Amino acid sequence: MKRHDIFTIHAAPFYAYRKQVILRQAQKLKQVFPDFEILYSIKTNPFFPILQTISEFGLGADAASAKEVSESRRAGIPSERIYFSAPGKTRDELEDVIGRCHIIADSFHELDLCNRLAQEKHAVLPIGIRINPAFSMEGTEGGPSQFGIDEEQLLSSHAFDDFPALRPTGIHVHIQSQILDADQLTAYYAHVLTLALRLEHLWDTKFSYINFGSGLGIVYDPDTQKPLDLDVLQKKVSTVFDAFRPRLQAKFLLESGRFLVGESGVYVTEIMDIKISRGKTYYIVKNGTNGFFRPVMKELMTKDQHTPAPAEPFYTCPNISQVTLLADREGTETVDIVGGLCSRYDLLASNVTLPRAEVGDRLLFTNAGSYGYTLSPLLFGSQTPPDQLWLEHEIDI
Ligand SMILES: Cc1ncc(COP(=O)(O)O)c(C=O)c1O
Image (cartoon, rainbow, N blue to C red; front, side):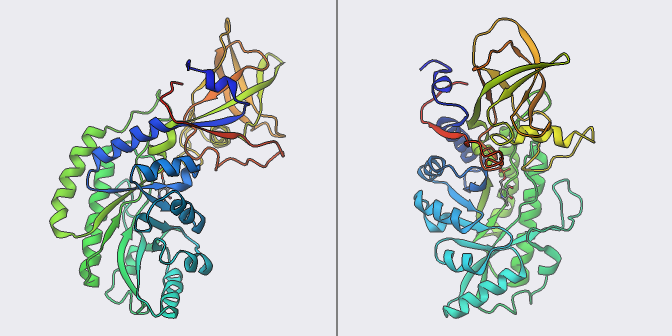
């Protein structure tokens, strides 16, 4: 199949995900973290063929809801490779997943709920704890967070006295996504390992897992970002983990969403109208904000500030997606690409230079595999949501 055939045949708009890219990324993670269990963060993209690919490759699941636990099981991921971690779990959800995954409690209230459920079943429940650590990704002190339990509140040998039916079996620390600096990631891993040793000592236990959360980033904007140097990361990581390994029995877990699937996905939409208003050219496409929301965040974030900080997973940097016209056209023009909603912020790209398009031509946006379909307000405007396509074979974009 020629380069763009698949993208021009299927009715637009749609997302398309390339299996071979996901497999390549998974292979890279295995090389950098050879002894780790890699967990796919389903929230980034729960499209079922992706879960099946993840399962076939032997990865585990980072599930953020009971539904994601069920979907993992349906895709063939064994219970012992599924970790359920999210704030605000309900009693029903917890009851539903017991025995079908590892549960990672996010608060003392959740510990209490789990303890009661275990007592009702006359069982001892292994439990993981998400920790809000006393350090940040930048190496400074940690701040308040809605995620996990503050490290300081756990630094007591009595932390589990109120929960006799629970056995602490693991910890989970995730503080930041989209890191492209190997030194930063390595320092973070060393902090987590030190914390794990400290808690094992205090609680007189040996953890069966340490979950380092995610953090690995991808290049969204090649003009301003450099890819994470995986060779450097591998060397640094192996030095750190080799130093701690003899003192720990725990399995090491790493979560990953965008690194695995971000670059696999594209978003394709159609130009429905072309309008010139007081010298400015607009391409009006099907399903802008209500198709692929992340590029739109640029306008919202840069409205008042010049250099807004990332706000993952909604906003990473101004240009998260490169846009291509899927038609051979003469000449170029500089345009705004907008959707059809009742907002001037329904803007996928501003002042972008493209070949001079015609109504009916299609545009392809890159980096749409992660936080694309699920993060977009697909119901807004009551338009038909985009399809999702699965591309098994190698295909260029
Ligand atoms: C706890 C946790 N783990 C993993 C992820 C996945 O992050 P990423 O897609 O950057 O790998 C997230 C993203 O928000 C998260 O909150």
